[in-house]
Length: 173
Image (tube, rainbow, N blue to C red; front, side):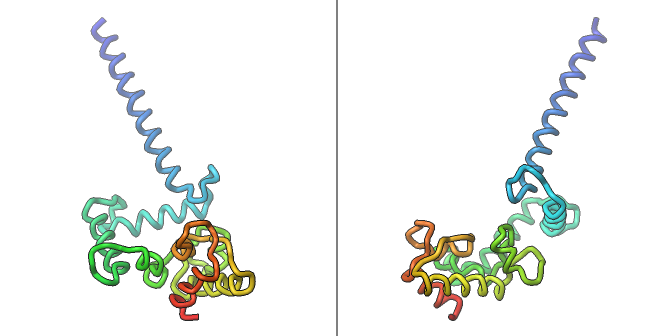
């Protein structure tokens, strides 16, 4: 009877561990599925492995608190241009000049000329230049990327000719 009770407890513990492992795997899957299509394709798997390697500076593929703090510090150094300890709307808007943007949409992939999965400064500038040309011709353009979101000051999903002046200035057009 005692042996049976111990086995039941062990079985409950095993089931609980399997359940928790399943939750952890589901979270990994959710993070890896960047385009949210319910499938982790080869590119998403490779990106997840690459991200994991890059994030763990001590090469153990585990991101610890020190590494998170180092990443936040580096982000602040690159984006907080006026060094006030905060990233304001203008600094966030022009972050494409200093921080690469993930090419995770069809439009961004079109501008990822070197095919590395990221938009660098020149690629982002080309995207904004083309968007500016559309706005000059048609008077406005739909916001298609997170890079453009910073220029949509009234947050209506459209960049009009007035809002496009900031694109012109930031991209030196």
